[in-house]
Image 1: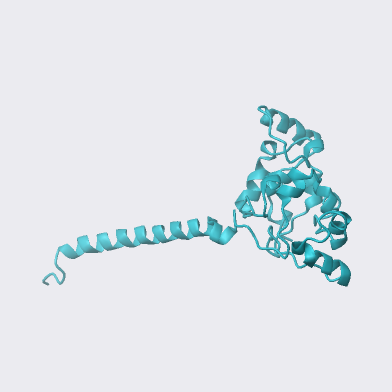
Image 2: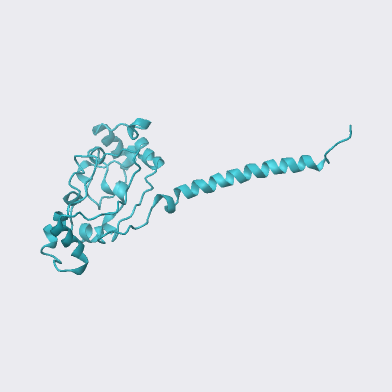
Length: 216
């Protein structure tokens, strides 16, 4: 029986298969990069708010502690969004007639809450508990970045699972003394790993990586 296909068909077939594999790998690589990009994660994207609240001004400029506004961060899963009354504790005296603060005054008069846009917004199928992390020596800036340098708030971390797991697997790289948790100026010491291993033992930090830790 005579040969149906020319000998070159073998080469064409091999090249086609190789090209298809390369193309699929390339598309998967592109998809992976898109998934990690700010377009998906929101990293370094400042969010518009009803009031352009500046952490830089309030934290660095005025020295306000995180817990003054986020009152439940040490005791509950949710750090807490301050009620308008918290703002008016100061702004009934300071900048009390400033036009850009009129939405705050209106909220206080009417009792209607300001609708803030969440910056660090995890999916509904993920459970995160602020109090557990804070009480184990995880600092605010470890997850939220240098908020004292943010005129508007943005994410500095992807909040993706691999980012969380990196800390859960290696807590000694990130844990700090509990007295420094709310210190936005804190910088890890040169002996971070040595100190971190000691604190992991002292604070009884478990390297929890099972699915049920965050998904239940």
